[in-house]
Image 1 (cartoon, rainbow, N blue to C red):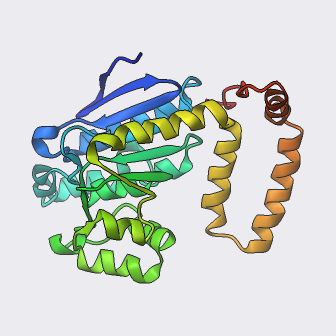
Image 2 (image 1 turned 120 degrees about the horizontal axis):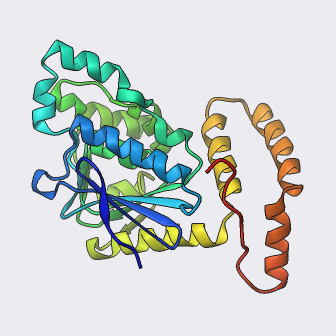
Length: 269
């Protein structure tokens, strides 16, 4: 059992089976984000990452949208130079914060995602998408640039050509194309998306070492900027450390006894 509760401006959250689910919760505004909501979402991710009971995070939207991007009123406010200066200050968090955490993030894209909303989905490790949903970078159609690291993320997820197509055109992409180019990993009926994403996250929470997942995330993201030889050498060092760790021994014992391993919380969580 889990109880949903407010997690900040325009957000709610619930925890069950080691999974913290965070909802963008402004359905009357298509879950569009204010600056405060963006800040509180990142604060909610940090809180989940620090909670030893949380071993995976699912992020989704309430209603028919995942997140329509920045709230139109928030965008209009950015015409004021003072507000632009506040935005440039990153409101206390680096824009790429999700990549720095140890806890895996699964996006349950239950509906449309545009602009900043799509960026939040891109920062997840795995994306489940509703068959009816549409995705769009939107930026070029608003006279803006590729925001919050999306120009770094997209080429690494879908390749240079597809990334430029999506970013330059800002066109809408349906679920069939999103799956074909590797932008999402699962496509399901809308009513199944959240449950399937939560089941996937619960499997991570039950069967995967939190310490291992944190190191693997770091290996993947840091490896994007290093050469093959450096990445392989680092993997050898990390493998030797993991062989001597408690989680490896617990995994072998669990298998021998025919049960799920009882991994300890990640150190520092």
